[in-house]
Image 1 (tube, rainbow, N blue to C red):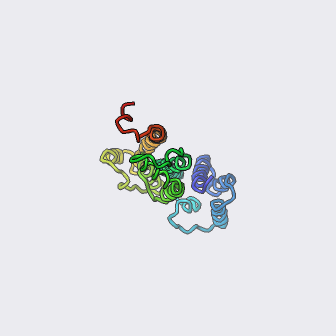
Image 2: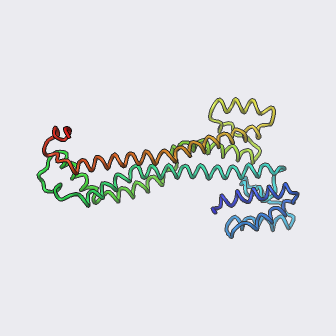
Length: 269
């Protein structure tokens, strides 16, 4: 469990204990028991010592520090903060998924070319073939030595990309921002990316307030975001498989059809 997941768990457990009538110190002490040793547990321990001594924590603007200090007059903000962290993790997971597929899209042909370069039949190097054969053997000869380094370099480059367009990621990112704002008692209208969302916000705000209206929009964004990521997760491998099999078919065709006998004969098979 990473620090973000630990923080979300702490928020939810603290909120649940508050709802059952526990004081903030009691709720935080009980929630602390479920945390593994680490930075988050250390921060909770320091906050518990501060609360036990009767001192007030210094506001830092950090969501975790605000919870540890007992700031806020409602436990709902704890649930919103936990949901914001969960949605943030989902957005990061979708980004990593996009990086994986983009890496495979380019690295796989390079690795296939390197493999073909090492196992190509001897007849392709006899020098009696011309045109496309020569180009093919030259390419595989280069990839024989550079295919793996290029694939590794591409993987490292994609890994360093700060952002990537992945279906559903923007919805999850905006939902996380709206939920975090709701946890802090504010609403960022800039995170509402469509006129429909703004109209819904304006219609719901008089009835339930800005925070609740933003939470409802965030919940809808989460549903749409997860659906798009789910579709991307299942369709992208199929597309990659089709590309791979197409490449394999072309490669096997070039390896088995004697182009030196003429393009006409090749198309007449």
